[in-house]
Amino acid sequence: MRRTPRDALVAGDIGRWLRQWRETTVPIPRREFLRRAGQAAVTVGAASQLGWLQGCGRSTSTGSALRALADGMDGRVVAPGDPRYGQASQLFDPRFDDARPLAVAECLSSSDVERAVRWATAHGIRPIPRSGGHSYAGYSTGDGLVIDVTGLNRVSIDRNRKTATIGAGSRLIDVYSALSAHGVAIPAGSCPTVGVAGLTLGGGVGLSSRKLGLTSDQLMAAELVTASGQTVTCDARTRPELFWACRGGGGGNFGVATSFTFRLYPVKRVAIYQTQWSWEHAAAVFDAWQRWAPTAPDELFSICKFNNGGPRAKSPQPVVTSFGQYLGPEHELATALGPLLASAPPTSHQISTMSFLDAQRFWAGCEGSVPQCHLPNQVRGGTLDRWAYKAKSDYVAAALPPAAIDTMIRWVEAWPGGADAMGGGIQMDSYGGAINRVAPNATAFVHRDSLFSCQYLAFWLPSQVASAEGPSLQWIDSFYAAMRPYVSGFAYQNYIDPDLGDWLHAYYGSNLTGLTDVKRAYDPGDVFRFAQSIPV
Image (cartoon, rainbow, N blue to C red):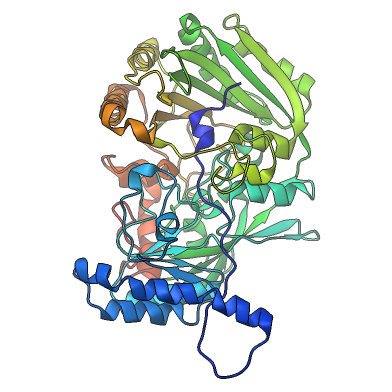
């Protein structure tokens, strides 16, 4: 099966393990000298930004302040003028490449994060937390100080407690790889270099979630640096209100996450399926899917997708597909798929069994080595790349009527992308199972009564901005508007949408009051603020 654009949403690599240069008159060993000398470039980079700072109306004292920030950090401070600034300031989506942060603090420890937060607040500069750089709205960049936790990427397993402590900058493919070596896993997403922090804080839905719950449902403790620049931990007994908010309250609202402790589950092999039908059967297939998938066995997470266009397509052709993962043997999956396959004769249908890690590589669109699941300009042989995209989301609480299905079909057929566009469509992820057995107020993730979620997707190549971006954005907005009569009015906070009206209710519903209380307690000065942050 061709890899979907959604599975290719990846960004970044593992943080750089470099020490900072400090002036000293004491002779130092060669190894220490090399480590410190590598950091000299950071100081030069900070100094070289002075002209840029003046051009933006900032005083040259900011340059001196940045040098002071860099001094004493384990990681680096990358500022304009540093050759690495372009890459260091980059998110996954090329639409945000014009963002010009004051600097990027590449943190390697909690103390680095503390120092960066304190520095930003002391100088009246907005701290911007960033883990994987996948914010759909570009909220992990801006004109402030980006606090990048990519270097906090260690995975430590406690066999006795059956838990893992995972650094907030760890990318999902590296988490999966580290855990699979011990035959265990956590439920997480399919995009390989999404950071675990953003995924967890917003809830975290993936192909194991109907059996194992959300990523945040398996969270046992979290560590954050708050607006005061202090590291705090929270769990069910210590700061339980903050722990509640960290499970679905959204990234970047209460502090900078530095590590998480998760409950682990034994998982070795899984069965997966991929099925495609001709477009004439789209209505029948989807109607069967929506009545079957949310009540299927918990072990099965199923996706239904209408898509038009795609890479190397000679001409846009809509297709209907369904694919998913089963935490059990292949013969059980074959039986479970019966109601879906009875809806219409498929043009292709495959079931296979593989290791859990191989399945995650498959969903990520990178079936080679784990390093190849990072961007291709970072690892030779990598198979993934950056794509410009726009997404919106919905939740569905009752089966969609024929009029809604017809609306979906018409708008997918109307996709305006060209022959070489990445495509556009709508993807439905099944809920139910362990996701819905948690009470809506038990965690900050309120969306516990949905049958499935919808994600509207529009992709185009960076080279197609002039020809495809405008029509694509208009198409997805119009498609979304046409579905308003049929959906719940809620939206997934991890698919954060800058154009969403009444977004506080859409993301958080009845949990908003509790989240506002936590925000006031831990960030009364609204230090961690962005266009859709929880208000004080």
